[in-house]
Image 1 (tube, chains in turn cyan, yellow):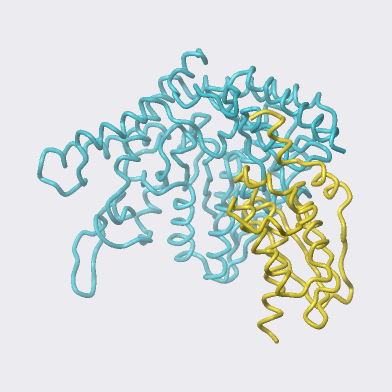
Image 2 (image 1 turned 60 degrees about the horizontal axis):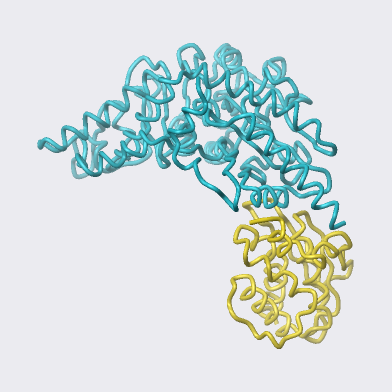
Length: 409
Length: 147
């Protein structure tokens, strides 16, 4: 994998920000887009923009073929058994909300339990809070280990025969922890619960095999994996999806409409009410092509090298606190940190003056911030186009930040 | 942008208020209490104000946040002490205009607050600076309405 060649595919990287070469380290928020993805959107709108599944005309057929072709690419990408199990959504949030609003509300009653963890993103917390309120079920939290990992013993201890849903993120957007989803899914199933996976931070960076993970639902977003915003995927096991009611009703998703009763299309379309995000799906398909050409295993290895290097270099800065596992083997490609006596917003502003983009804030994980006992943190997150030079620039920027703030004090 | 430009944001006066915040704490007999947070970044302020005869007699704050939000809170409490409610609210409007780069009466002596003018050049940080002022305005407006 040649990073310099890869960088050439991403036109946005070739620019100066505040007089310095852009160092983009906010990939966990959203990734940049390669030319092929940008061109796939352009081509659709220029050459065959049309609605899907209804036109008899040529453009309609082309659009439908491209949209459904993208679904097949996603199916292969996550190794789902069938495209019936691949639902296009607006993103991870909508995908998780669909499971909570449809499956959870229909299947939970008072006394049942939903199990999530302290490290979850708000989008894997609030849908379950709402489902619990609606059904009378109880929401329970898995504790974390000191190093920000989940212990399987804790899972075994916290889960009960009343647990009906376990929903855990595959990779933490703050701690970087890679969670043992396959093992957690096994424990969930032994206890009669279903396993839901928030894959927003894993699908862009590693090979996903939903059959091997043996999960029941898997949600992810296109925009974090080189694709456009506004589209994501909900994978669900066919027999579960078949027994679920749609969440949105209207055009596209119906079979027969009467005055007082209607019936739904078959899977996956019964969950795709309204004109779908056609260009987005095509763009996601183009992003998958690129990721598979380069190879997910190569991307993972590259990021592993970067995060190992970053952990080593950053920990040499005096006064830095790094959150999450110290062992790079337990981590994905991001590092969350704080600099003593400098607020993360101030860190991000000073880095921005150097052309370095990082995220500062609570990263949509307020319960985790409470667990870490911080109000906010700074985060640098890597992707296939980042280099060790980017990390050197980050380290230099952080040293300057420290100097700048110690000067004014 | 160089580090010189950063100096327009992080002025000496701001850093002084950040390091030595004025009016830090909680008024035990504070007649007015406002809690406000900035949900996008996690900054929060706990503001207590003592109001008598339509005047802000005392104000204290506690909170978590960056240098801009905490120094702004410190300056705000300093500025409103002894001011009539309507004067304090007017000051909040002036500050809001200043942050948005709009014109305001430049003959006004804003004291330390003027140092925050540079924040308007950093759009992502404007919310940091306005949090304390919004809290003050909210508290005093409610006080006025409950009269």
